Image (cartoon, rainbow, N blue to C red):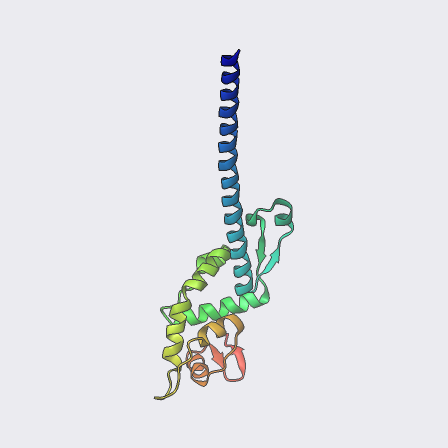
Length: 173
């Protein structure tokens, strides 16, 4: 009787360990998926904010899958893309992701925008270095791309010389 009891207890312990181990790995996998979804959701948020995209989360709210977030371009998005394309034509270090834009692959457009940041800062400093003793502005291109703002005279002159902006109007067509 004692031997049967020990076998039953051993089987119960083994089963509990198996279930516990399975639950541990299932729980770990769920946490990893949740973290990956959170990171992707944040990337959609950064993309929408940076590129001025409208966000539709109605399907995401139902499924909780970030791939179901829909990003839609706005007029501000198209303005940003137009400025970006024009600058990429005159500043060779700035890449414009034409294919990703055509496919409306906004995450890849955002990745291209982010990867251009340091080149844009370097080009900004080169354009705005001005006279000796003046401080160069490393953000003029990023500010121009994102908001259309032109607050630096050297940069304004650069845009006019390259036919991107006119003195009293937006982009020349």
